[in-house]
Length: 353
Image 1 (cartoon, rainbow, N blue to C red):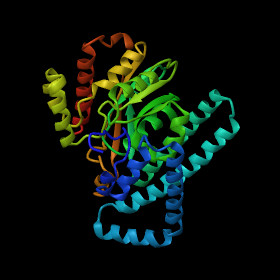
Image 2: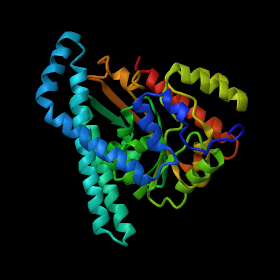
Image 3: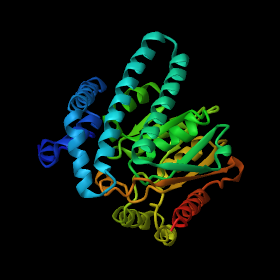
């Protein structure tokens, strides 16, 4: 009907006809009009069938893709990615079985369930990271990891690649025992392990097309009563590209024009979005802040970027700074403080050349 605004999160049929099948699946999976039960009825069988197909057809596709790698001369990246995808699917299925087991053995015991899901999260995230290192021949180094604990902390981390989301679990949670609450985009609900474990733990899947007031209110809840835990946020909101940087600066010019020159000086980072970061700072005034920078995964914002083979053999360097809560400015000065720190993150990345 003309003049009727579609329900937020609903999927328009006209939109779907213009999208690829994969994008349609992602749109369906994170739509707010789809119940978790229906979403999981789609994603879990799909993951299982994909794993079965890759496993049973391995004698065919492994030699074929190997020959493609010989001719492409790109470090056999397609074979590497398919092997990782197989391991990813297998890890997902094991994680789902473990999640079901946790629910079965913890009826009415929310505290124990949360502790077990945290252990599962550490195993799952670290396994994904180890698979990436194995199949893509990645090496890593970290500086400042002695500052990670104790909580409470707010973790603001750079977002540059589709594969850097494994870093916090591997280096903060699994290595140091820091239990994190996450702010993720709803599109990640297409991952059934994140879906199931996220709703059993303190995850919030933000609807980027939803009401800003409602989304920030839910993020504010994550910052309350942290105890020894932390909240992890990607302040940039999305992965860096030059086009996204231009759009972000255009928006910034309308709200905080005084910060535009600083944002324009960024070479590798997007200007941080103030909403969620400032909301968490206000919700947890006694929490320290961890700023997490990393370099080595630039230019890999999309799956297609990985096909060049440039990611193979990369060295990922991670740098962590901890800022005491008492040293964080109050009021309007906080946004400038956040931008100054993000400039430092950008300089760290740029120093790699």
